[in-house]
Image (tube, rainbow, N blue to C red; front, top):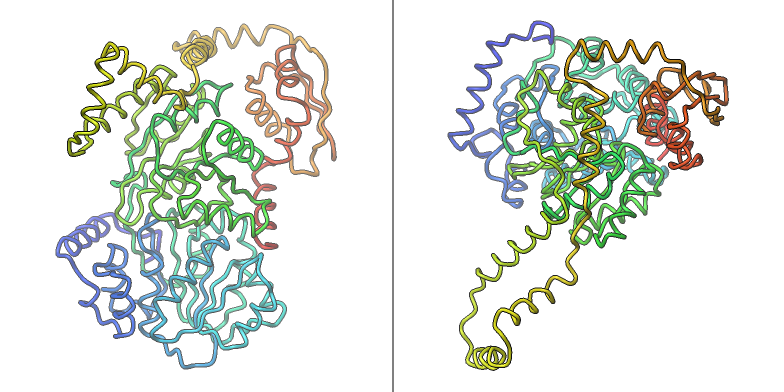
Length: 580
C-alpha cells in the first residue's frame, strides 16, 4: 500500500486490532520465533511485545515486501525490526546481509548493543560503523564477516568508497528514524548508499513523522511498501503530560532554576537551541547548586561519553543538550524533558518530548516560554489534540511554601518506633524553651541550605504589559498602530559590523529575524541591512544598540555563528556527525 492511497478506514481498523491484541496480553511465545531469540528475550524478562512489535510480528509476508512504520519514539522499534530479521537470518553465511542506518552514532551504538544481546545465542556478528571510533577497527569487524552492519550514513558511505564495505550481499536495508536522518541533511548520503545496494530485497523505513522529504525518499526507493502506522496524532502520547511555564524574557535561566525547584525532577533532559546556550545554561545550574552537564556537538567523544554515563547512572540528574547531540538517545527513566524556548516546529517538539514517557513509563514534558513565544507555540498546535497545562513560573515565595509542604509531609510520614532516649531528650528541650520558639528554630535550621529560587513575579508581569502594548487584542487597533509606526522615520543610533555574511548562508530576512530573537527586540528597531560575502552592516535604533551592548558584541557574533540559517545548519550538523 503506497503512502498516497493510505485509507483512513483501514487505519482505524488497524488500531482496533492492535488494541485487541494488546488487551489479550499477547506474549512473544505466541509467535513463530526461533528458540535462541525466545531464550534471549527471557533472559531480559521481556514477556509481552509492544503494539508496534505485535503488528510487525503478526505479518506473515513481512520478509517479502518493503515496509514503512510510523510510530512514536520509545515504542520498541529496534526489537520490532530486529526480531523478524534475526528470525529468518542465516547467520552462518560469511557475508554482510543486513544494513541498519541510524541518524547519530549514539543511536547506532544503542541499536548494535540491542541486537548484540538479542542475537547472542545465535552468535551473530555485528559491525558498528560510526564516527569518533577507530576506522581500522571497523574495517577489521567488516573483514571478520559481520552479518549485520549498523552505522551512520556518513561513516557507512566512507567505508563503501574505501572498498572496506562490500554491499553485494546486503538483502535488507533498515532506515531507522528516517525523518531525523533527512533533518540532519543526510539525503545525499542516503541516496548514494541506496544506489550502491543493487541486490536489496527489502527496504524498511521507520519514522516517527512523515514530512515531505521522507515521502519523496520512499517513493523513489521503496516498491509498493506496506504501511504500518500506530500514531495518527503523534502529539497524543498517553504517557506524557505537557505543561508550559511562562518565564520572563531576560531571566530564562532563573526561570529554569525556579521550575526545577518546583518540579524536583529525578532525571531531566533540558533542550537548548545552540551549543553556546547549553554551556551557559549548564554553568548557571551548577552555580545555582544543581548537578548538571552539557552535551553539544563540539565535545570530544570522551567528553560526550562522560556526560552521558553520568546522566544514565543518575550521578548527574540534569543534562543540558542541543537537538543534534541528544537525538536518538535512549536513556531509561527520564522523568522530565524541559524545552528552554520554542522547539522550532511541531515535529521537533514531538521528538524532544519523546525522550520521556518511554516503554510504558509516565513522563512530563515542560516548555519554558516567554509571553511572545507562548503565542507562537499556541499557533503551532492549533490543529493538534495536544493538551497543555499553562502556568506562570513559580515565584520565590511559592517555592518556599512548596518546600515547607514537602518537609511537613516527610515529617508526618516518618514511621519511627518511639524511643525512650529521644522522648526524654524532647521533654528536656521543651522544659528549657517555649515549644513554638524551639520548633521555629529547628525549622529555620533545616531551611538554611534550601535554595529558594528567584523573585520573578515582577519581571514576568512587566513582560506581559509590554506584550499587551506590542500586540493589541483588536485587529483594527493593530492595523492602526502598525500604520502609525510606518509613518514614523527610523531613528538610527549607529551601524554595527558583523563578521558573517552570504558566505555563511545568511540572507537579509533570516539575519533580521535572528538578530531580533537574540537581542529581544522587534523589527522596527532595526534599519538598513547591507549584506556582503563575509560581513554585514546593520543599522540599529537607540534601544537596539543598548540591547546589543548589554548582550556584548562578541557574544552576539558567537550566537550568530552558532545559529546559522537552516540549510547551513543542516550542513554543519551533517559534517560534524559524518566526521565524528
